Length: 96
Length: 125
Length: 130
Image 1 (tube, rainbow over the protein chains, first blue to last red):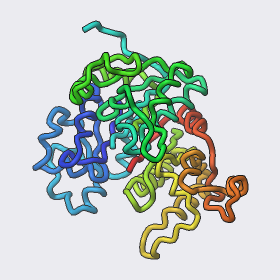
Image 2 (cartoon, rainbow over the protein chains, first blue to last red):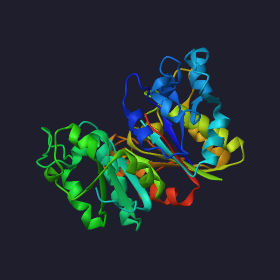
Image 3 (cartoon, rainbow over the protein chains, first blue to last red):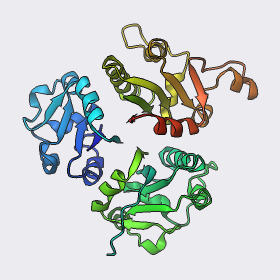
């Protein structure tokens, strides 16, 4: 499993498409920074191909006042969860 | 389309930015060259706007900014011969594979995950 | 596990340095070893010793120094990316005939080869970009 890290939202950057295209079947995607905008229910359609493998960083959602809008299908993790995801992955790839 | 065994190596450098507009491409290529000079097996993947770094006829910027075309010519000298580009991205700019300044292999989106899996370290620029 | 971080965002311009520091703090708290933070691209500005943020904002420069002091994490700065951007340690300032320096210990100017070495030495290298 490879952990892909995305810090851009699908509303303003198409890099998410390249990240999704580069993901293997077991890979996971973690949304951080402005990337968490993609975790909102109104945006989640962009990530439907990886349902169950999508994560978002809680503190980046919280700081933006968006935790309540985060879609139920997204697994919200704190920074310790981010570390755990990196431990479980063979490597990480950052997309920006 | 012929099927290739996915390339493997120590380092995959993914280049996603066009020449001249930022230093990403140049700094990404520098990292690749240094890794190769240190004896690592390096693969390059030109993706998104990064495919434009392969286009012929690039020159210096108006203030004499070097650009990256000359650096690309050095890749072979550093034994970096495993070069891939995103063929959908290249077609999106209206270029054909014959118009590239280097011999690189076009890949479809599905070939990128095996490339990433096949390298110990992946750096994106 | 042994970790390395690659930081490519300038301090205060993007969230990259903040995210990297948060991640760094969390991973050492979990008992991992953070070998080195390598600064590249605009990330080299994190090494600017004269950074003077307002007192009610996080002091990123001091936080990097604390990481070094408390956990022995190396703070390595790509010399080529740094010199272009006016980030010189005393030796480079002298070599280029400049009257002051903008980088000092615990930050160290080093070659990209150190990034290659780091990538080989650690179990995980995580990139924080702008």
